[in-house]
Length: 292
Length: 231
Image 1 (cartoon, rainbow over the protein chains, first blue to last red):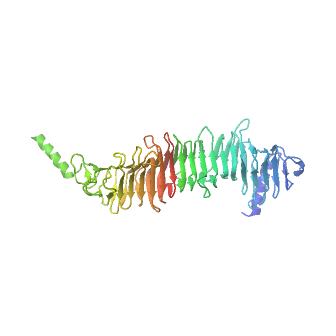
Image 2: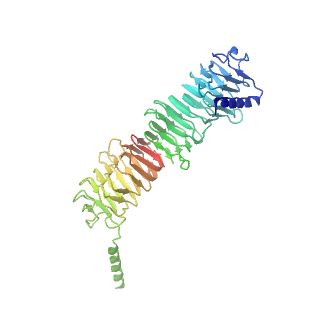
């Protein structure tokens, strides 16, 4: 697909969902500016929960020191996408399918400080790519998926999430872009429901990185693969503190898989076999790990 | 008279078939070789060896009179083989060399000393044919004492399960594969046992299913060099 065709498709897609509701699209116009600054939006006002927002390259929009809302966001559309940074306990809440684009200059949401959050309690929230990513840099930065007052909240995340942060809430988080612990601890849970699809990855990269699954309740039924990257070493860790099963496979070259609840992996029919060429699997007392 | 005739016929039939499987114990009286008169057989003190005449014999190696016990001949299929350092607190080793053919219809157990101490049990598969129905390594409960070990220099297939109890070291030569058509079970093998198996030397275990279970202690699979895969 050419870049122009791709841009056209994304634009049509974006228009498709903006045109179906009475929402304004607000474009961020400052090169580096604050979400809360009306002068940084072409409409001369800050976005409301019914607005769609667009941040294009090379602009950097910071959400800090308060709560920001929008219906949806697009970092792009362009091969070079803008950046949304979260700092100083800033929280951005959205509700509808959004995009983080940028195949050449990747669009990013960056959690720059502790106590920052990207939040939704919508049943229809998605973050789509391609090209963009979500980067956590602090242990208490959070992606929060909560249930609305009635019904179920759900975030389908189709872009990679990596770094150090938490993914939690009472709703459902679906990993369709890859979740990677990198440079620290990435905590998945507690969540109402956890999902993914075949071929997606839960991954640990680099030394001193931990991917931690926590939560109680029903077994999480997954399809993705659990992978310890080639850059991992003996200090890299996947720690599973909630019962889960996946049709996907385990692949590890180093590090430790620490199993604190019953875990089932693999699918013979799909060819999802275990491949352990280094490292350890530790199964705690009374618990079971099985790879078919 | 009729009854006497029937009994005689039965004895003759048994002798002709040589069909009664025998439980052999290693005594190492003569040499280190399996096929020499090194076996005690109950009250008879026979000088034949397990697997020489018929299938279904069992072999127990629990004394280290001359070690290792060297097997370099082809045998009838045995029922079970026990390489047992626990029975007499003596280090024991079974070595399969070129020309050997050891096939079992039952369990091959390699068991180290279970009390405090260092006697080890080792299976050294150097060459020949080895086809156990099931294989169990049963080590000591302390990481620095009395391991059960497998020095596995040639590829072979376990028809059913390969089970690990307590601390076990498997040295599998690079390029060689232990194929397990059943489950590689680490810990909690029927009874409550933890398992800790360390795989090294570059070779591969490929099992239909991998199961690791903790009892009151945790269980561990550690790959320092080599691979553990499911198939």
